Amino acid sequence: MTLILTCLTHKHIVQAADRRLTLPDGSLYDDDTNKAVFYCGSVAVAYTGLARMEGMPTAEWIGRCMKDAAQTESAMKEVASQAERHLRQSGAPDKRLAVVATGWGTLHGKPPIRPFICVASNFLSAEWNWEQVADDQMVVRTKFLNEDLPYLLFPSGQNLCRREEVSLSRSIRRAVEHRATATALARHLGETIQSIAGGGDARAARVGRGMIIHLLSRTAPETGSPGMILTPLTPDAHSFIYVSREGRTDRFQGAVIACNGLLVTGFGGGTIPAGGKGRIRTEMEESARRSPIRVPPGSTGYSAPCPLGAEGSPTIVEGELPMTEEEAWIYCRGQSGHLLLVQRERL
Image (spheres, rainbow, N blue to C red):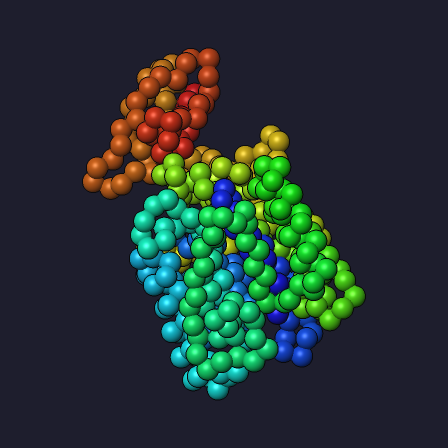
């Protein structure tokens, strides 16, 4: 069962989840399974429980449940309703499942925004304690960070022992008191997960060293730009960092993205090395070389429809190719648009 650590503070929210997938008998199935969803550019979602729902990976299934909802609470209620129906029909109502969402919102619709955690689960009690046996109903519960408290730490899935929880809480408290950057919070959560993964008790077989860590900044919604998600961790933006079981962060794999009826899976990439162009730029150049704009020998000016433009209303590109140049790279619309190659014809 996945270990999810969610930490709410009044400036940042950090959620860390391991990526190990085990079979019911405890044997390892995959150590790099995506268990995270990013909902509508502002809410991080992780799950613990069944690896697949209705024939698809659970993270993708959660995204499908959430993508058409207008706000987090209705999205989580849809997750709970669909999960309860699936568990009942599949004959596995005793399987424990928890979907943990966290983000920024308003309590009773009244500002200011506050950090919240919203859980859809069949084994979370009304007192917010994890039960050993699944109930026959999925219930959605929401909690906001109390204004009088500096932080809220909420472990899900695997339990932390008393010593681990006290140690992590102390680290978080010191970080908040000393106004440490949000990356310090992320480091404390990540190190706790990796310590358990490398430990000697039964949890080590269930928890992997690979992780995805989401950081949700209060600055993003307050400045009107909550929809972006960046990598690596960026204190003033919604961001994430992917960590493989070997400790690598590149190439990365991101969460399933769900919003406004859309679902994006297989989201990932990597950094471009110094001097490199990246796969997209390389593909653009290869395409442009297949359809260059020709300039006759002895001429400088060119005027031609963009060979990659829409039919019926082509964009006309115009300019000059200096006599000393054999080719030049341009864009059909100023600094953006299709990348084009202007090439001088040979005699």
